[in-house]
Length: 154
Image 1 (cartoon, one colour):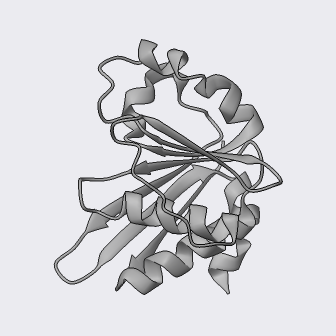
Image 2 (cartoon, rainbow, N blue to C red; image 1 turned 120 degrees about the vertical axis):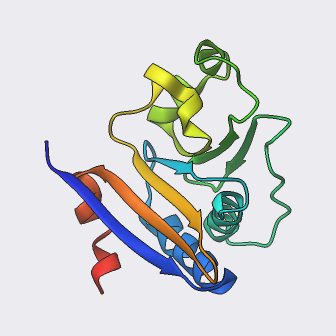
């Protein structure tokens, strides 16, 4: 199976938010972004900007660190923002109802390594990394993401 892979430099917060806005316009029901990286690498910043752009309004977008899941409705589809950091086993994922959300919603999953065998095979992994003077995000996923994210080459 062919894969899509590209790396983007994020020199500042504005570039991270702009990238999230582009993603928010491109994703559809059933799309999942796996947001990985160390604490402080930009995962939550990206997710918050994505959600605000998708909702087309400024809204408080709390981190789901303690609730595990925050859901939003943009009028077209539901958006699930999940922070799985506190999960101790992949079995707990099923209790959250994620398997249905993977089909019916847009899912933004922080700490996706906690998904284990429940990781959707068609998801796009967005690995964030904090560098000395900027951040980077490496996008990796099935070939279908190449077409869906064709604007990255513009």
